[in-house]
Length: 404
Image (cartoon, rainbow, N blue to C red; front, side, top):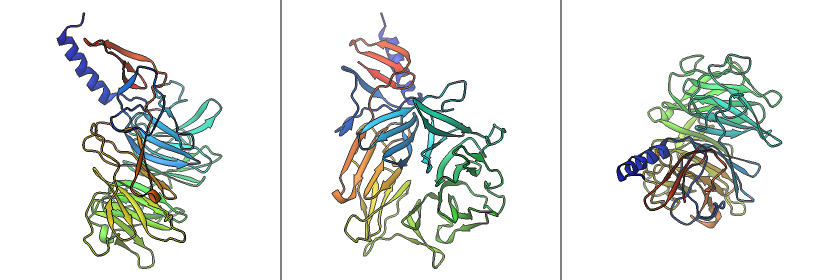
């Protein structure tokens, strides 16, 4: 028999495990559920560990880098799947399920960055994925990296992968869909004309790599000798959190709002509201939408911030946020991706709560649809407990905590 004291201790242990576990992507929170996978009869997921840090969209599949591995959502069918397989000894898996960044190259390879275990490239094969790893402690040919803590990834077609790390921007040259680390083309702060400043994000076009930093945007040429320049201008005193290239324009998301690069004049201009004060807000993520009106050419932006999502409809900044989830306090929107007039984001908090996707279709107004990957995948059972009220709690290696 379990005493009330032991029950209290176990409840505390459950809470702590729910915060820390590097689990698969499983969620069930209060509120309306638009689409979700079927749960086994009688079960519900109580605790989740799948905060979404980054999103990429490729060939109809939305890919998310989360605290619990790789989340894949097939948009046409609404089906979710996941890769949370860290822990193997032969290298044919993720080195860590704590993912921070994701992008997909032109050949369909998925590139993921981790919190402290470098980069992995996942190539689809019959029955699963083949893996290739890049990390700082591996000095084998093609295996290196500037640092193991990855902040952002941007892929240029099927040619080059740019990886923002805590030690600068690493470059991986794609060769035969495999990839090889290029030390000479990578850029470290304080070396080769690259300013000594902390970097946060990268976006790439056919000529330049644009790097978001604490001192503005650093731009360097993609081809040797990779000449770098700091495009400080009005951003020199502002931290740039995200840089986005869309529709031929370069945008910088800062702690004070969104800026647009004016190539002809060589300066940054703030995206301002017309006829009213432009709000200051922290930009965590940013995407540009296409104007759904026939022949329309309005500048349409969606910016994820702290607690809210802002939208710019060509003339004024306004609010366009997904409904609040009562269980998620101090939410933030750190991931955003768009295709056509549709944007995808995810709300989460510092505790890792919020592993679901939110979709905005601009032509339908400010109306969000929530998609929740709340199935319980097959997983090893680590802990089992029974409460006084005859509720069975199960701790799973890949799927967090479930209750029956």
